[in-house]
Image (cartoon, helix red, strand yellow):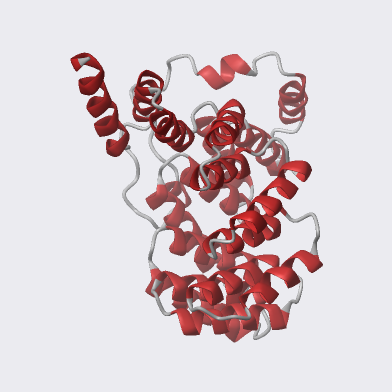
Length: 337
């Protein structure tokens, strides 16, 4: 049984289940990995050095070996419990392992142990926002700003909380404050632009232009500009910006998907299919792309192809009920012919 008390360090670690002794696919995948061998050898030679376990935990985390990462972090913390980065990685591991409660508990404990660590408090805020604990997030943000009145990241997160709470006017003010504190905050510029768009502000474009001036190669800034024009129904300009992204980031599927949507809207159906195929080739489990392709195929009269792609979208995402419904609808029509 796991210890009940949350006051001990070990309360941050989950108990092993009954399958703990079964072969682990991650271990099998990297059993002969030379990088892992180096990390293992270091630990064998330096079993009392916490950093060795931490470095191996980072490696396991990157390989999605979450059980192994958690065990190594437990060993690292047993040797040295006063390193904030150990708690940060543990929280990330739990979050990616779909154990959000443990992730939040880890960051809450870390913030108590390291109350003056701005990075720790920012990370706690991030997790509180992800879990929609907005009151707690605002409390943490106020704590950060009491220690650092000019923290641009805190204002960025404040804007996110206010935006999620549908307080758009104050959210825009918070994002603008973030850019005042740090004019290189691309996310703050683009988020301010998004809100300005929603509010019908004619000056929204300048936020996106500023973000691109900060970094002409920023994917987020370029994508935000393209989406600005898409939201404005300026399809020609939107296509122009999405194609610019394709030139710089040809391996990212999302812009191809957006291009497909735009081509469908202007009835360039063959080009829409081609764009959705590009997105699917880059991401074989892109259920929305299969669904959008099916819509275009149905427009073209290719009912069998459309039904297959509706079905594929539903298979890839069982919660995509609309895709399942469309698949069944077309199947019924096809069977009647």
